[in-house]
Image (cartoon, rainbow, N blue to C red):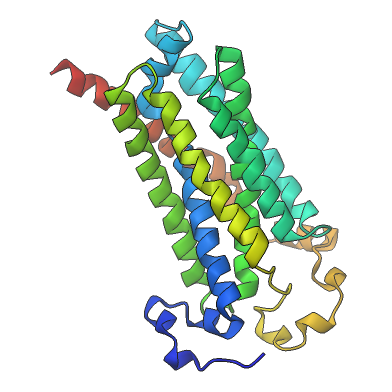
Length: 284
């Protein structure tokens, strides 16, 4: 493949000039990844601004019941499944195509999200919201491992920052969108928010599936530049010896241990404070 001079690519203004060397296919793939990341995360906080509306739809009118059954139980089950799927994807990505796993993750996560808008009982809603953990848990590790093969270590952090930004904006826009619809229609607004925000992901996933190719494993590493495609996939697989090596580093252990308590403030902020703010504004 003939490389395009990096200095001539407009992508250099965004710190993504390395994509130009991979051609239009990889450029399209990157933007599809951004789109999938945005909408997969956009539906994660749709519950927060609609706690009371959702609770009322399922006969939960006591605030304590709403906080526990809607704002507590569902996120717990969601993240338990999502965490298990994330770990599993690390293993499965070494045996199957990462592109295929990304497509499956999107569909397995967004179909239950779409169906959440049609839930007729609390139990049904819990099942659908728990199953959306497949999407977030599966897509998170896969997107970053694919990015690692599109970019070298010089631009990888920039690309990862764009995807992380897309996820963060998706969270905020999704919560805002859910709140606007829920406020406009307390009965069905929250249902429509799940339906509307799940549909775009299917389009991004289909385009990625049809037009985009999976990058060569190790293709972004300078040591493997130009020769990565000559080595079998097994050359890049993670071994148990590699896992043991990770846990020998005290810095890694510290990062792992701070993960759970480090996420608690974010859960409180998005789930609880948004509801308190809404109650405060509605009482004025």
